[in-house]
Picture 1 (tube, rainbow, N blue to C red):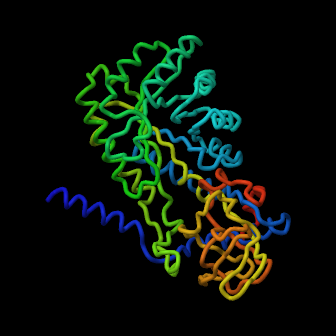
Picture 2: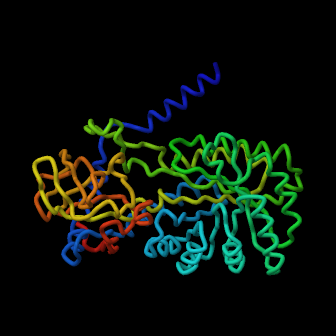
Picture 3: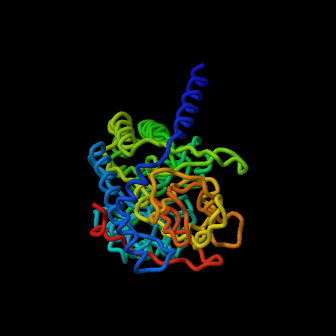
Length: 424
């Protein structure tokens, strides 16, 4: 009975993740910056990406405020795989965040961005990757993925005679596909013992992560299991060596997108994704730390937000190339700008800046690639649609620019939005 009740509660939480309604607040926010967008269109040919520093700053500030209020000893590292554009990464660093990297390439970019705090995690790191990270050990913390990686890192640090701080990535059975990363929690004590063999590897942290968490359950459950394991298998002296616990990222932006739940022939409705607000994520994680981890370890807590930080930092600007009929129009850019067929199933409010409206009309807003899956959306906030109208696709900062590809079309440039031109 208890298990049935837990399953029912979980299903209710997932169902509540999808709600009806619209994203009019986002439309209004973009319209408040209409003059700034149109000023860019006067200077540059569409299509292009727009870097929105004001939007980035707002989300960084809100994130840091929420987590520092609930976890006093907290450090945030932006996951730059979500958007690695220099304007984004440099601004994140200027706002006091570290950077989370997943390759030698990203590590080099993070150093160029001026980061003084970097965490490096990926599976399958090569010896060259590890050597490069150890060379920058003064600012880089390595999150180890396996016993094999520990042994190779130990040999490399022994040869270089250079110390590096490290954590070990763990997973529990409930993590499913995310068990690709790290070691099972039940192996943690043995891993810790083996790390003692390597004098230049300072293992002092535990790391876990799962993306796109629709509820706070992942964090609470994993924190509880990690705390129970530490309490059972680590002596009070051993626990003093656990100085960092990293609960990853996976925080969803609140009410910034939707999904089409019907099949392709009936795309008349979309549902808005309604995850917890960032304050709810932070409070739930903070409460779990106080309840489970504070009694067993005295640690600094790390997190690697990505999507939440950069989602509102970039928008896409297009123009209407051809109005085919009252139901179909062609825009002058394709979804190669986001790297995948995102808008077949995901909804974002398309906004006509030339003929703006706060009422949404049904249109098939096609891209200009020679494919049938090149579509930007099935609706547009517009009084009417005419050729050369300027269309904004908002909140395209996460896993879009980073995935863009030169498929048929080139990848367009990025221009910065000027706050001085915003409509009063």
